[in-house]
Image 1 (spheres, protein in one colour):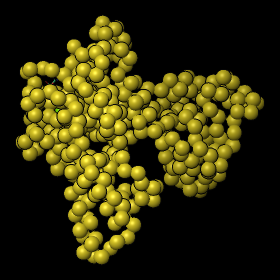
Image 2 (cartoon, helix red, strand yellow):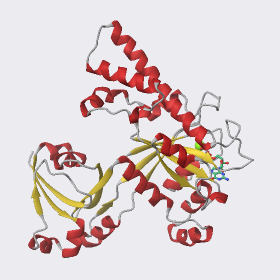
Image 3 (cartoon, rainbow, N blue to C red):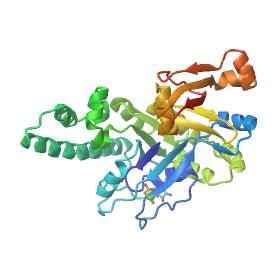
Image 4 (cartoon, rainbow, N blue to C red):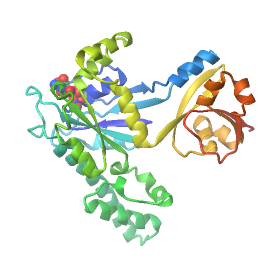
Length: 352
Ligand SMILES: Nc1nc2c(ncn2[C@@H]2O[C@H](COP(=O)(O)OP(=O)(O)O)[C@@H](O)[C@H]2O)c(=O)[nH]1
Ligand SMILES: [Mg+2]
């Protein structure tokens, strides 16, 4: 999973990036011209527990990679994204829009005032406009070439949808239609999470910024973050964090909350592999077939797929060992078409 962090200048993108990944990228600097990249390992008790049992050489969590998009090169601050950013975003799986909701007189808002719903809408429009330009150019070319195939028809639908003021993610398309336009990597089609970056004073207030209301209206998921404080805590040694969270009145670990929301929103789940060499969690979309899950590990395993031996984590732990889980009939042999379930521990049998 690769996630792009976007937003207006000084909305707290780098602050959020640091709080999610524990990185120490410089905040508040305007000289930095590079995107920051870091990884968040998805905490997973199941991996820890299986590692205690299997004592593997290696323990690997699922990962989210975050790209904190470099500031706007063009100098103008009234747009959140410049062309370098648009290119960098093409290959991310999802977007997090950091919306400034903290009031801090010392930090200038590029649009002159703090207005989260305006910022959220404005950036949506930037994404839509960027897609529209690509769609229009392409349609024009295809018309010249007299190419009116399926791809053309889907592009015309996209054009109308954007012209009606909507992002492409709300356009209902069939699996085939999605495939027809997948190559364009449209930005307004990518799942987007609105992350309100609130000041310390807003903890516990309900929707002080009107962002939840905007989210409802536009069908976007919203989560609240106290960026500055979260970053401070995230940069402490792990064992000191709980006490600090309590002192500061911060609730549940914000990364946990972020990950839960992201998994839900993106329709993701994890399956597990366990053995002496490695215990590992793998992230896949819900409703993935066994053979496609195998491909996530290695294309050879999918190609030579024979069967999958599967026991769900809960059954395995309840039984106490693989042998006992087998005795109890919880270890199943499944074929290519089996739909993977969250927490399945899998051994793929294959032959290449
Ligand atoms: N009070 C307050 N200030 C913040 C918060 N988040 C970011 N800032 C400040 O806003 C400025 C810009 O933050 P930064 O993360 O660099 O924003 P970016 O330009 O979007 O990457 C810095 O001076 C931060 O200290 C917050 O939650 N509360
Ligand atoms: Mg920054």
